[in-house]
Image (cartoon, rainbow, N blue to C red; front, top):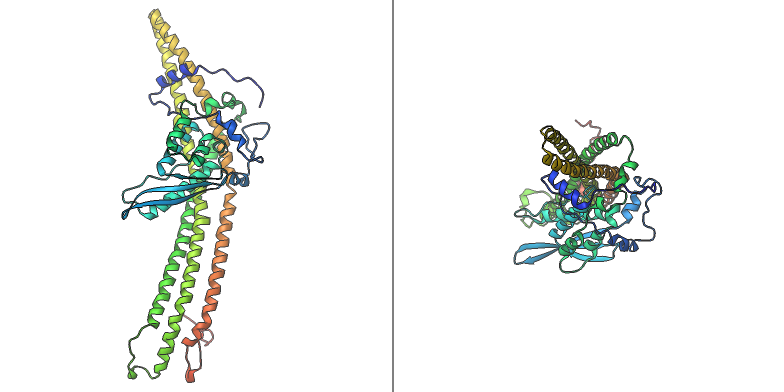
Length: 459
């Protein structure tokens, strides 16, 4: 903070009209209930994160501080009408606001829209897709998980976490939260129009900001590609554990079915009729241990889904939102700035041509339009620098999340250790129960020996 007065900006009406003339596609309506931030800050914990003194561009948050901002649960509450699932509601519970509200998918959509309109230069995570035709419970569960990741990333994002829109979404229990969100967004500008530092963003940016932006974008693209592959492998590992559970359960059931078989055995079929009876009794009892093994394998698979795959998906959602932000910067404010400059050049040439042809009325009209276009260029240039300012902060935020890698690896290793340890115990408990399956001469129990014990080299 330098304490310097804010650079003058063109009047909003003139700038808006000129900008609309410079670009056929009007900017989406924005929402920035700035006055609510004063009251919102009173609701924050006394130990909330503080903006570091000095350069406001720099962030000093840790991953622990971000995660401590809030934990939001999203649970499925289906409403059944007849035999078909008509619509789905979610119970959204916030630890920070000590609230529990009911939301539908369309409520998330409106919240996402107003959030994106207010913070076009920030990482706004994408929403999962809308319901497809014939959506099954697996799709609905996947969407629930994605909505949970979305709202937690938003609730822990520094600017979002202090905005009234988030508080409304997480705590408003009225009948129409969508109307309330739109009402809060109505007539309020985006973050650029309300940020006191917006006009001076360039002063805080490093001289080589474009080079840094290109390098950061390439790095995060590579990180995304690697984590995408890690997520796929983790999904397959978790899926194999769940498939293993199903196989073990069926294996035990088949042993039990074999042991429960009541088909009489002819006397000429076996010399020792009692042996088959003993075997059947032993096989029938083994289903309990195999059911326990199946339960342990299923637990491990679910744990890996929740603690490993979901954390990888959370990080991937964050990285994807950064990639989307980079595209918005290039295709949005940067593109508009370049178009405004191009139009300004055309106007200059037209004015020179009119001056040469001695058409004073045309020259006067062009001069007026050129002044307006200069205001547009000034505004777009300031927006461009503010967009880079936000991008620089969002890049830092991504790096704050990078230590999540250690959390993911720790959860994966602990899951493997605990899962194998528990299953090993069940296997060891199962082994003595197999002794009755191996009947030797004179009813001596002789389990089969390995090829090495018999002095045979296995091939």
